[in-house]
Amino acid sequence: MSSKNYLSIYAKSFNWAGFFLPKKTYKNCSYLYDFCRVVDNIADDEDAIEIKKIKFQKFVNDFKQKNFENPVIQNMWNIIHEFNISLEIIYDLFDGIESDIKQNVKIDTRKDLLIYCYRVAGTVGLMMAKILKVSKKQSLKSAIDLGIAMQLTNISRDVIEDSKKNRSYINGNFEEINSTIKLADTFYKNSFYSIREIPLSFRFSILVARRIYRKIGYKILKKKTFENYSKSGKIYVSNFEKVLETILSIYDLIILSLLNKNDDQIEHDHLLINKEINLDERI
Image 1 (cartoon, rainbow, N blue to C red):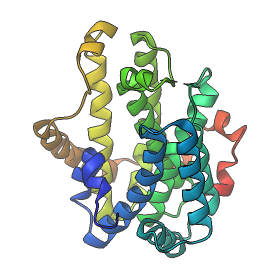
Image 2 (tube, helix red, strand yellow):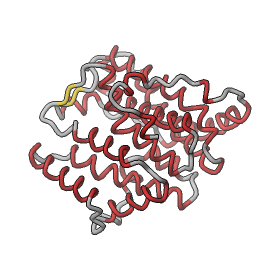
Image 3 (cartoon, rainbow, N blue to C red):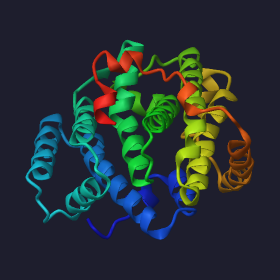
Image 4 (cartoon, rainbow, N blue to C red):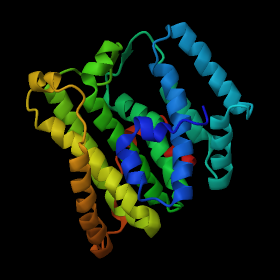
């Protein structure tokens, strides 16, 4: 297990962006991703639901009991201590993963959609920001926004794939997909200004990841109909497009340094999430 780099296997867009991180920081980000991927794989594999529940509970118990025979858990605890990550964030992630371990998953409201996206991805954005030494409260909220935006992009891209697993996060029509990408865009916008609070040596990498992931949404919109979308298979950003988005990220870096807008002026769309989860406590 310790020999696998899940970041390079599963998260090719972020792994590309990670090339621009200092080596030690990339390693910590990789450890975080390994942890999230291992627990997420329990929900996504082909086992029967009851087997998944047993495996999930064992992983959670091993984590809580600090079973360091599992290097993924040991590395995660090292990150928790080094970057002062609240355990509530980890437990939110667990809640999100556990909600997928059902025969049928159906999300009916925007509130439930945003809470789900916070749990499975906003938490990761928040923990990643702490690894990148972000400390300002508004900036950490923007890190949550970036995680939510990326998850909304994933959901928009994977409607067909998710339906085969009896998962319905949004309705299976192009109007709903379009609406979800536009919702993601508001979260991408809210994440931008706070990237200035990330230390310079890490900043470019996050701008690249943000641009590449956002590009997926734009490519989905170009399909225009559900029929075209269905025939496309998994929509991804090619290596050529990644190079282009990386170059455009230099423009973002310049714009970010010139803008006067303060991230304290951003109105984060966290009202629905805060009805159930107190984000201020997590930050």
